[in-house]
Image 1 (cartoon, rainbow, N blue to C red):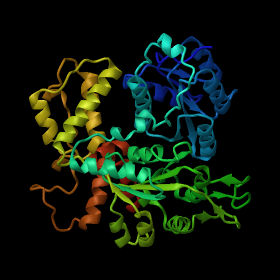
Image 2: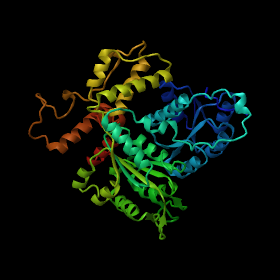
Image 3: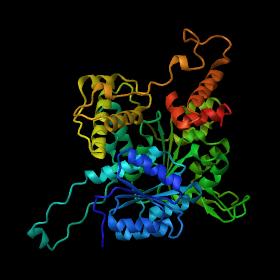
Image 4: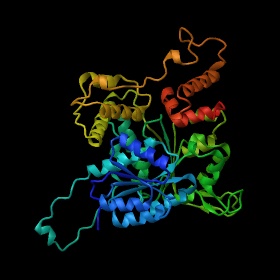
Length: 474
């Protein structure tokens, strides 16, 4: 029976041609060995020829569906990590797939960076596992069986993946591990975009007693507000138009495990009230339901915005804030952590060397000075992108200063509020109007590409979408 021997790369199993092409292109540009498959049958046939190490598998496929393909892959190729791809309406199936052995799942529409990060974590973890030592004759004849140590977190989600030796990072890592191993069932992660909140949430889950249960990641900003209540709590048949069958919500699907509510500040007031009730009583009702349901889960929430400012603006409930903030963990930004910047840069350099077959051995003195002095508004994510670009496009043995290209954001002359001296002038309409004009300017410059506009403004995409909604631009 063929086994995944680690020599394969990534298979993308997706019947929608445009989406399949986009994923394959993105992965190849990032240096992955990747093949596209239009059906489960096609993927299984190719696996016979050369097993992949990672399979991105759509749940809904013509012919054999993704769930059946997963069962075959887990039986024949246990060394292959399978990541399910699904729409919001099929998250229930994705969580069931994880119970059947899927490594994780991605919810459409997803950011290509999340695909790259997950593939990189899986392949990097496999590369870091040493080959078993040859078995000796004495070991072969041993009759006693030593008990196995309990499995630790997956390599991609261990505490040492939060890199940095500064006091702030040391303190944060200790707190993350303490929380993971505790019985705490409510955690709030705060920090700027790009500081590693997603990774911290997964480390908390996989380092806890809940590690064998589901980890359900919900990006609040990515789910339409009108659908979010039904997605979170589920609904009963006939509770609203098109509710043709009973549906379990994400709280139920995360039973025994962890639900990660990313961008918690985007919740509507109505859902905030119902989430507060759940956190206080650990029970809820499905939309249209009568009987209360109870579920044992840990709730990890995250935000990159100031929730106290939202409270002052009456956009977020103060009682919910304090209920979420039972155990707060702040993810430190890169500002003022020059030594951590260099440590992270070396880490990413080694990662992209492996992935792209390059042989850089470090940074020259001027490059190190440039890395230390740059204002990393995009934090670890920005640093990762800078190093990836340098390794992808350049060659040599040391990274030089000229190879490090930063996006410095919009110039003063490009911003709508600039006027000669760069100072605001009377009649601009105040801060709110200035913010709106900056948003429109960045969006116009990028043909309303939200990801690119967010990069120009130095904020995350979710923060951009929040401001667009606030100003009626979305």
